[in-house]
Image (cartoon, rainbow, N blue to C red):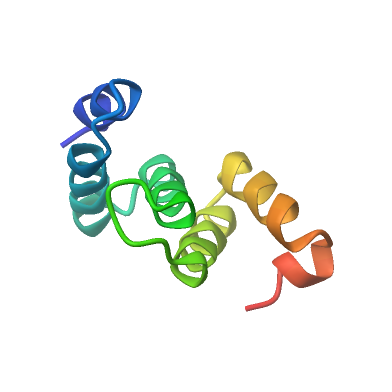
Length: 87
């Protein structure tokens, strides 16, 4: 499964659908872009209950795997590289 459907749902503001699709992609493939987007859903409460801890956890995993979007999101939320890079 790729993230084209999930991205389309997200861009059409169908957040419950995009959340479900990104979650499935992450569970099946560990795709870092989908992991970043799933974190975004959790952080902003899009299609799910807002859960900052889950979002940060997903962004840390994606960041370690090479996602620049996740690294940026962590820096935005944690304010320092020391905080965002801790396990």
